[in-house]
Length: 285
Image (cartoon, rainbow, N blue to C red; front, top):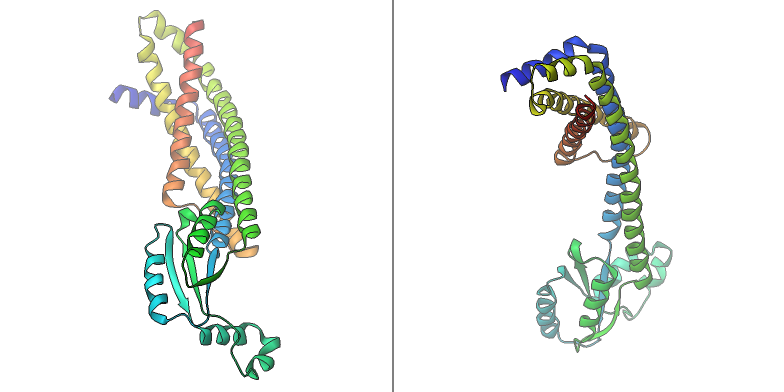
């Protein structure tokens, strides 16, 4: 194992320019993928922020005893989809209207009787904020005897669902395309490194070295180059994020797990690229 590591590190000294080219190519290929990843992460954050506003409002029949509403509220909070259920009294509803509808504030103050009903505002857990679950919970709320009407903005929720599905489909398609291009470019670069040592491989074959013995240093080199390239790509992505966040719009960066996944993906691509290139070369020798 020590011999494999030593041989792998010596390859960087023998061909520093080619090694630097390989690392740089991997870095910029993954940087492009990382930029798309940043767009995807921020788009998902934006959609998640919008989804947090998904809410079901159950309006309560006038004259409903507060005890009946309190019991119903506990039943609603027990729904597996429900994150929180909040009772809004008639007076609270009027105060909200006065605060939010500034242009009608004078009219609302002069009212002799409060026309707004009490309600229960229901927020769902993140996993249940799609149109099907929202509609199902709304239908269940209608079955309560004290509920007069239920509103949740069906069209708006359905459009949000379609937007999430479209974003996921585009993300997978474009991400796969960028990944495929990165793999091809990286594989070609690593193949150049293998061809540069073709004479050395032929000599090793002549003295009886096994394919596994020849392959191992190249695999380790590829993994190291991919690892370094991935790390540089994450650094470049962070620089791009910092500029965007400072001068354009407030943005989010990768989590530690996502950044580690990019570095790991670089190492995996380097390993696979080396394995493919060396394997093809050994068949020809």
